[in-house]
Length: 211
Image (cartoon, rainbow, N blue to C red):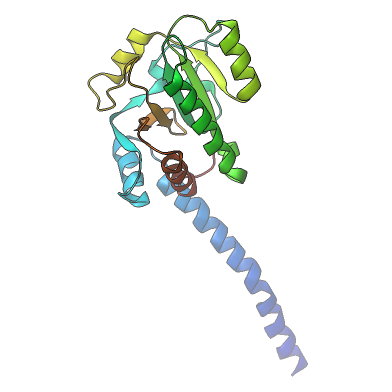
């Protein structure tokens, strides 16, 4: 009787470990299946997330690796060499106007409100005009110390967007969400609220694997 009881207890004690292993494998497999590898799979991911996303899906999506960029030291900044993170891309030309500063503020607050998930997101300020002046550099250093600042060419950025639906221009501000593979897939206009961006980001992070 004791021997039978001991065998039963031994089997029972192993159940939690087996369940943990099964759950871990399931999570890894689901992450693999949800990893967007092309346009169709990205659209499928967004379909899984729901059709009630607040941002506008970028049609067609844009591969940011095709955009030549440089850092503030004028060294090449290659998208494909960056850590795989979700990124908030803020492209602006010339003076950082009220809309520019509002997007900087909203993106920072959203990043903070992601709390423990904030490490999965980076913010990138894309300057498509003249080098930033001392005042702007001081503002970014003071109020946005974790912001990545890169430079690019306005004409090349417009060519990259092509005839897409973002209708971005120097006068029409947009904030783009770029996935972990460096593909811009969604955008927000000044009419969107910070809560819209926060809600969509939480959804995207929840249903995408951490690389």
